[in-house]
Length: 139
Image (tube, rainbow, N blue to C red; front, top):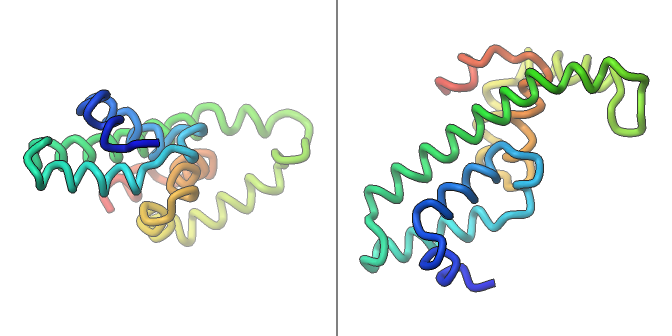
């Protein structure tokens, strides 16, 4: 996968979409977010991208992705746990997530931004765990 070609072909919209998806959508965990950001930063330093627009765009994409992931978890998560326990979705897990996020929520969200796979699922689980949105959004 040639990230330079992806960025040049998809442009700012593609960059926004990948960072958005990696920050808050279930399927985003396999996307090349960290290496894409590094490559976009390098291209911006070489004049291929506007550095200020790139920085603003990826910031907005990450925050929006987190917000969408949280909202998805908040709206859809409890419905998943209303059904009988399955292999992955158990009411016990929901209770543990709520307690964990009550105690460590803001720290978890901040730390998750630096861990690729965790970054995708943390906002969703925070929504399922009913963490106060303002506690994570303004941290």
